[in-house]
Image (cartoon, rainbow, N blue to C red; front, side):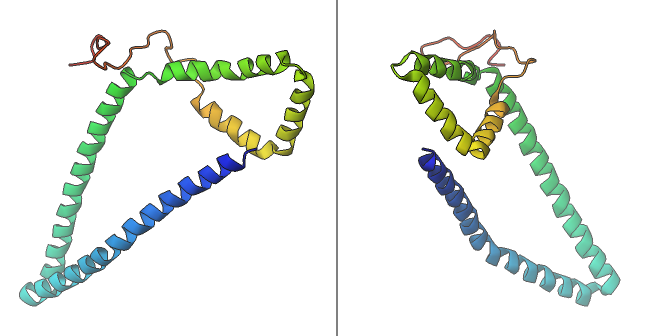
Length: 172
């Protein structure tokens, strides 16, 4: 019953891992080359200015590169936070969450109104009992997406798609 879902999850995970392994295999020679370039630069600085001054220059240069990288990452994270806030304001996934919250009750109602519904409900309960760890995992994943009490589910502003007007304050 869950074999297709498990196989899809395995293939998605393996493709993700293979993608990152391929990226790492491309980046590895560049990382090694960077190490040799830093060693050559250090030897050149030591020959030119002496041990103490060469190592200090190398440390200062690497610290400068680190500061520039930290600033770049900080600016990028700030832009992502702003984009996430804008996307959260215009998010329509709250509707899907509300529908998903009512789906189990609708399925149970449909199951019990079918001919032979209670006996098939017993069979479903047996299957769920045999696969209890997987059911528990799915319940925990569902709990992650369950709306919390602090979320405002009344104000849902659809994303403008050319047919609906944008939400008030969507554009600054």
